[in-house]
View 1 (tube, rainbow, N blue to C red):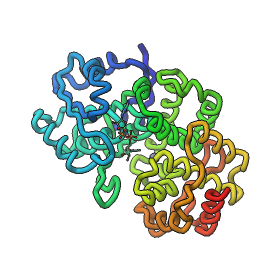
View 2: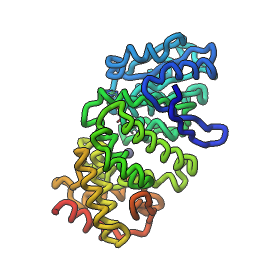
View 3: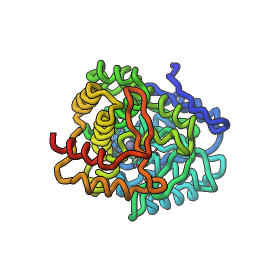
Length: 362
Ligand SMILES: NC(=O)c1ccc[n+]([C@@H]2O[C@H](COP(=O)([O-])OP(=O)(O)OC[C@H]3O[C@@H](n4cnc5c(N)ncnc54)[C@H](O)[C@@H]3O)[C@@H](O)[C@H]2O)c1
Ligand SMILES: [Zn+2]
């Protein structure tokens, strides 16, 4: 067994992302080599534990470990749950050389990552992502986050994982709507930086839909490779990392306006289409490529139109109040062609408004 590997190059914080089906024996070898002797603290959620309890035991066979299964869902991505993880670590005598393994989706990854970042001023964390979204996006890059009643991800820390272990087979049990959420980020990645991935998505949709297929593994690895290169260039989002926000300006506004009834990936898909339409309007992106983006979204049951209940004015004011607005300016990422984007902070909001009107109407 020789799993495919992508390295995130960050000096002494560099780490590997390993891909492959049933890579648990390599995982065990790796843990025994780098964390000999210590107890491993596994954090998961109850959904994942109920489906994959046996797999968690298989992954950790022969390694002293304890397991904490958190209540699942974004509504538990809060500080009470973080406290629960702190208590679990303290009761398990976790020390500076202990290891946290986040075994689950993005919520588990963000919570366990944040707890690991802050417990004893930082202990090691490994990500074993089990949703498509966490495999292609949240497990890589070292961002952790916790929600406050006042807003999402208001707490957080940069804490790079020590390794990421991705078994694409896990996504087999994902409900279709969760798979779709991950695909929105995949399409975003292809549009912003990977022409080959774009062609792969167009040519191999049927194979990608099969969990554990080589086509799906290739899709996930391509996203991780791209994210790794963006993160290596700008770990703490001083500039370049913002390209990952493609589609997220309008996307976040829709999530907030809908009180999170519109799911993140669905909102991002609509936002990708807004960005592409704006770029077409400005003469920077071809109409034909916009049509290909719409087709790709349709292939994955992702929306492209704005729901009628949100007026362009409401969306614009939600965008302006986003905490990501820097010095009062909107930093908007726009596609130029497949695989290339540009960041602009001088866009005319009236143009965006027309695009939103058009996206709602036609
Ligand atoms: N840190 C980052 O860089 C980053 C990036 C993007 C998103 N995020 C965060 O990620 C979170 C969303 O992640 P998510 O979409 O993975 O959500 P999630 O962790 O809530 O998982 C979605 C649902 O699927 C269940 N689940 C997990 N694995 C499963 C499997 N293999 N089979 C069946 N069900 C499974 C979970 O229990 C949950 O109910 C958000 O909180 C978001 O803020 C973080
Ligand atoms: Zn996103």
